View 1: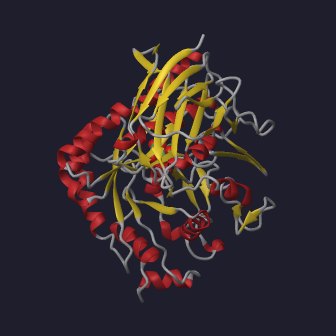
View 2: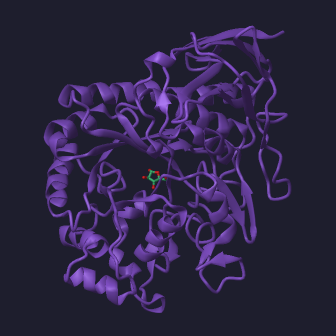
View 3: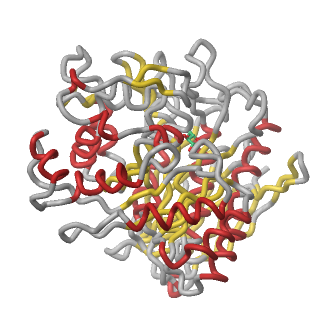
Length: 495
Ligand code: AHR
């Protein structure tokens, strides 16, 4: 049997632009995200471009990454940037207390990060230390990176081989300051934010976009207090939301799950919409003109680490279920694009819901990677509102999940892109898509699917889940009809 569903898109009502920064990434000094994942050093026998893995670099270029957040996460509030500049052999080592007690040799520091952003053509988002760092340290970091003047920090940067200042816009003042970033109360952090942010100067035409450390999940009091105390002094306020079964004990296997777990995950993932709405309504109260952006700068799935991998390194496999979480979450972000100006999936390589997994010289692209590739077309396009009618599935914990999730946008050349995810693990859906009076000439598409929801790409079988051409969309008598197979994600291009 096939389910009948309908989508009604309203092209004439499109007003908001989907910020490309919604497709941001996150790279923390955690496990093998930086070391082994992005950076192997110039002397490695793994093919590299000035120390950056060439295979990873090339794969990431395909995604048109708009911004990259660094160096944490929790690591950011123990990171002292001066340890990561100057000749590599002189850099002191430190213990990465948050992530497995691994020794960090600081060989990847400010220059290595900012040069990577230049290679990827993306904007850097620096998350600076409030928890264990000083105001002076943060102020000097801004000066070191962005000052063109004859100033002590700009001269130190020149001595370290970089003459021209970098442009850095996105500046995070602390991370999870309620937890690993200092265990603070919102009132106390609000005051610290005011103090630290005061000394983050705009040098030589570099205009900082200052981001306050925001709430996790359901902590609405954090958002309320921050907006009340500092709403007028910040450009962005962050929010972290993970699709996770809970914070204690096992989080479940990344690959060994049943359909019940699968649908529960979809429900937990979709709950981000309600959570965002509540945070946004608080922001609206203090900032009705929407001057402060909501930055969901950590999101994605969090499963148990793969058996046999180092504890605390958060290395997890990535299945079609993760791809669904990516698609569903991006579909939600698009709807709130008037307030949500940036998001960062956690994390780019080898950590949590990553784009890429590496093992020695090998590399695989995850199902999540392919969602980001397929969804690139929505970056900087006009969001088109829609109504979606489909069946729902009851799930444990009193949740109910719609079996389809969709989004649509119009790009600068006038093409309309429609992405639809069918989370129904068993049945295909016939979807009639109504685009009002838009003349329809041609439709083409791509699909991400697999024989099972647990399918993943491994080092032995790297091509189990891949993008393919999709031929299930037809224009018939001026109407668009789509048959979307079970457990699949499509993106259509309509001309
Ligand atoms: O992304 C992993 C960790 O999750 C980050 O370091 C921290 O900010 C969050 O708790």
